[in-house]
Length: 436
Image (cartoon, rainbow, N blue to C red; front, top):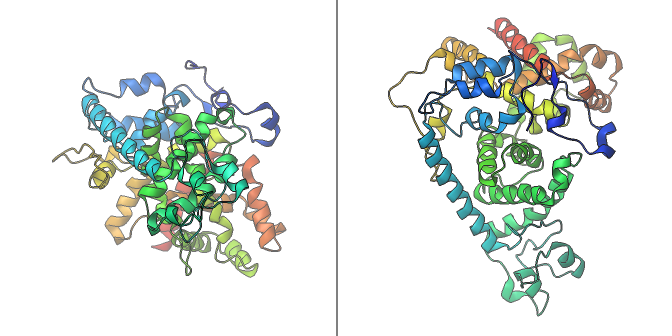
């Protein structure tokens, strides 16, 4: 494991890229900076003897320089609300053990429905029809069957398959998603050396398969594998990675709720349109004339939080800064009654200091005191910052929707995570001054 390095140490080596893919991956701009980045020493020093965390000092460090890669996983567990900073070492050990047991139960439940779960292999072809009949195509079976111990699919290849028909609609819907999860998993972060290990690929598939079963309203949608992958990389224990992903999805699952009438991110797209209309009316008018007034061209940025626009390391840097800026110490209390059996610690009767809130959340608290409106996620202002930074190019070169998409797809060489957050905060303040 790497030790703390000199100021400006590059972080690329922590997330190694396959040599044959190095030309296709943007360089990581994030650098480990002594005195700014949250170091291992500062992280450990932020805990009391019992294990309570001084979250205010941690947030301050993250907002200045991100998190050292060697401690990202454990820091993220706090940022995402897996643990209350007021909990002790012993309390967190108990919570972690309960959650691991809960995940094991869910995984076993999924394994009983389909033996591929936990087998070390993944499904990349459909295994069931919408009517619940096992698919008996020999090519499909060859690709999908993970063992020779007689799964329901394999036995369905003989006879008429009626005796193996699944009647439960929820199980059918879940099984119908398994091959799509497999196809997406095989495409996720494949430039990384980490995923040359097939165990890591199957771990990602298992977590997404289990999540699709427990969140029946949303299930699985494309983009979730991009959000889950960093959890697998940062947290060695599969159950711990699952719970971090589950907490992240609590923030983002609304983005994946789509109907025939609307897409899940519609509210955020509408907020984005309002922000650009106020802050850059010339750009907004230009986008409207090109047919982009619905801002659907920004759909991908919202769905996978800039994973496609940034290197792996820089996207993690951006995420942790976003979460630190938005941090609300009451997040664990919000998650307490979660029907998962994994009760989190809660500080009773203690008013949180304003320093325990992230900078963006503090500004939103002032705004809510004035007008009572709910907060707009910082991701909306981050997308707005990208549009503002590329405003001249969009005005001069964009002659249609395809041009808008092309320009935004090419920002990965110039996009800087830290600058994007700084600009997002400035736009947030400026927008509310103009719109009040």
